[in-house]
Image (cartoon, rainbow, N blue to C red; front, side):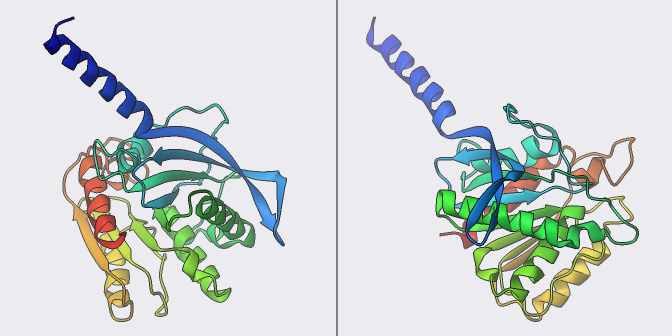
Length: 269
């Protein structure tokens, strides 16, 4: 084999290995932790994209009814999750700063009207804590939370739950994304937060006026870094606007993950 062909073969092998080792995916079961004892009788399934370049772990709490129906043999995820979040674990696309975790509620969480109180229950909040503590111990890296749409209610309710229990230090950053109206932070909130919204979001339950109002109120008291990013790319879809199109960053995923990567890279060192 001549030298140019040897070099080409080496490059192909290197690229192949990089694609295998830069990030990988798996479903992990997280048991309930009580008094330091882990119970496996009531587990939460989570989907993990692991990055060898990770400096933090991002746990995403989905919107809608929060129940994705993960199975232990799931090998990948597409749609909003694969397009918007998976690249954050891939150093070939972004900095690869995050291990990315998708939280799957084992039970459907009613969306509620006007407010999804299912996201404020002790069972739901303790389940999120189980997952946060599990991944904090697993990777020994800072944990960030992202809540999209109804998921933003989960992360704001969870942060106040942590405050009540003097545990807010276990969360190092938050992403408040296409947030459901009514998801709010109190004036004692002290954590970096990226606010993401889409300029043309047509979901009446997740208005930009609401998210901008929450951002401006929190700017008065939060001492940590905050940004408000209004996405402008992407397309609408001929489906329910709270489950599709601009609300779900359809064809705006690159703009979204670049905004997240840019913000996190300025905070996580």
